[in-house]
Length: 239
Image 1 (tube, rainbow, N blue to C red):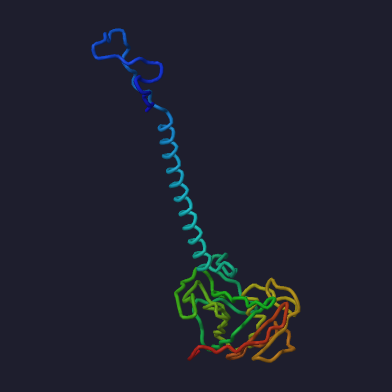
Image 2: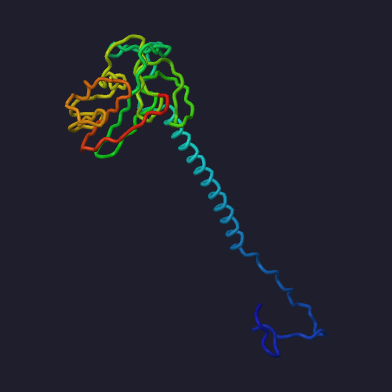
């Protein structure tokens, strides 16, 4: 509100008494509504709406990423064993994929792989045809069932390899990698290339890695890109 000078009204006007003739004096005009509050209000509504939409999209994106990660872990896409031929899984190195596991030969070995000094995780579900049934265990995800089981497979990702065969025969580490569909030789372990150092039960072995025989409770370690001393692995009680 404009201030009133002493003895007078607003600048440019003359004060009138209450007995003056008010005729001809135009009534005071109502103040014009300003556009600025309306614009600011609309802008605020727009910003609030845009923020809510961004939060919704971000929440959906995080949810989709989490679901995708969970699905990738459950299906273990790193293991290329899938049912692609009318429920038929081809034999590999004379090893078939059977509906049930056999225990005529029942051997567990442990495999550790180090690439450039870093231990690589052995995936669960190698040699087990999808679709899978997966449960939680003390060792993490455990594949309890699948479309079929090759005689060499993994149920967990702790490096324990199961040999459960209906016949007695020699099995090698090369057989396991063939079922895994990964290359293995003196200069390559899966996608990692370089000189391969092989340890068997804590002792360095001169045997080519693919020719190492799988024996009960054998501990095998493969090093690529550097020599890592083998570590002690204890099989679970009763294994």
